[in-house]
Image (cartoon, rainbow, N blue to C red; front, side):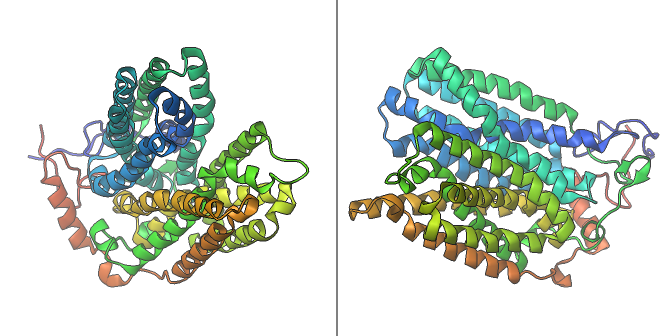
Amino acid sequence: MTSTSPPPGTPRESAPGGPVASAGWSRWLVPPAALSVHLAIGQAYSWSVFKPPLESALDLSGTLSALPFQLAIVMLGLSAAFGGTLVERRGPRWAMAVAATCFATGFLIAALGAATRQYWLIVLGYGFVGGIGLGIGYISPVSTLIKWFPDRPGMATGIAIMGFGGGALIASPWSAQMLESFGSDSSGIALAFLVHGLAYGVFMTLGVLLIRLPPRGGPAQAGAAATATAGAAGAQVSARSAVRTPQFWCLWVVLCMNVTAGIGILEKAAPMITDFFADSSAPVSASASAGFVALLSAANMLGRIGWSTVSDLIGRKNVYRLYLAVGILMYVLIWQVGDGSKPLFVVCAAVILSFYGGGFATAPAYLKDLFGTYQVGAIHGRLLTAWSLAGVLGPLIVNWVADSQEDAGKNGPALYGVSLVIMICLLAVGFAANELIRPVHPRHHLTAERKAVSDADDADTPGNAPAADGPAPGRTRPSP
């Protein structure tokens, strides 16, 4: 004997993959749920606040104090890649709960490490455990947002991913204030980590409770079904097949090049603007350089929602052409005439960082256009391995070149000329890779029969969901 679907208006809380929205549920409640996670994990961009206190309290070098952040970014990419399929199967609520648990626990372990002056515990907690929370949290709402907003996927994912860029704007002054109040010794750092862990755990739980999957009939807005784009209604490609296509790897190269170019400036922003104008009539003060970093963070955040929304209008390939081609122009201007005008330097850097943020926010919608919505979250997780590489490559290029030039007796803008040329070349490689992207060959598409078999296999695995919007076609649930 089989059971029928619940009556309209009844939330299917026991549905595989998480709770399904009842009739009348507003899809505009989903972005705030995603934001609660991304605003929290965006704290990662404010790690530099803890670097000087850690170096002083635990007698660390600058390289060692950066290790927790670097490991966290590496774990972000790896956990997103390996956990992406599991996130798709178990749904966004499960993923957000795992992310909240790991991210909060990471801070608590780091707090213990600071309190006992065991630096390896800080690396383990913030870098490894917290990094897993970063990766799972980053991809947790992506496919759900795309399913809720098939008509505006760029805008929807941009709203959530904007939170990751904006998280540092909240966390930086908050962390600085705590260190000022608690002290910057090991016990003060431990207390700050403890407060972070508890506060973020509660805040992220709001998203866990609020998130919903769209009903099987699709999202509705004002009583009418949302207009699905061709990518949502057309060809669907599984994650396993996607990584075997040239389109995936071309986009991987595009993202890696764009992120490398952006994060290189972001990580070195304060000393870079100071060095560029050190010999000018009006050198940049420490407070002005800090303001420059805040401006770049704002550009990063606004670029995520702004450019991803533009991509809904002009297309994903065209907006990446903009990121890469105009990014090259901005780097050329900084390289050639950046030291002659502070406003020009600031504007060029801000544009580059807006493209850096926009590239992250547009990537899920680009994947959806190429591979459909079937396993877009899992595919996105695999794509984020490009971020893991770029997060190491960008700062390494800029810092290594600057150190080498300084050893050669150079100073000022001359410290960065070679690295700027390298960034220009990397963006050119990314532009070429974007031009090579074409529609996915039909041999990779899932037929209805293959999708049903794949969904049935997932359903037979304990704890897995056959699909994000309900059971596979032709399958019924046994009655309780």
